[in-house]
Image 1 (spheres, one colour):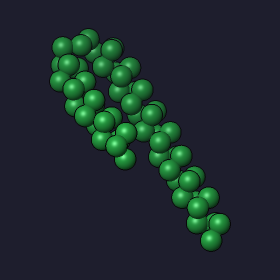
Image 2 (cartoon, helix red, strand yellow; image 1 turned 120 degrees about the vertical axis):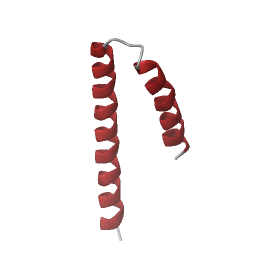
Image 3 (tube, one colour; image 1 turned 90 degrees about the horizontal axis):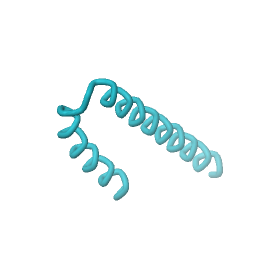
Image 4 (cartoon, one colour; image 1 turned 30 degrees about the vertical axis):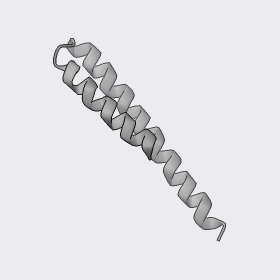
Length: 55
């Protein structure tokens, strides 16, 4: 949970600088963040399924 808070804080700092970055850099950063969030969601869902099937 602390990692997620730190990531959101870092994202806030990056969002402030994205206004000064070129559009292609912003799009690549957005894609990387989107992939990271997708991987996180898939891992969380898989963890929940594994945990509930054991009971």
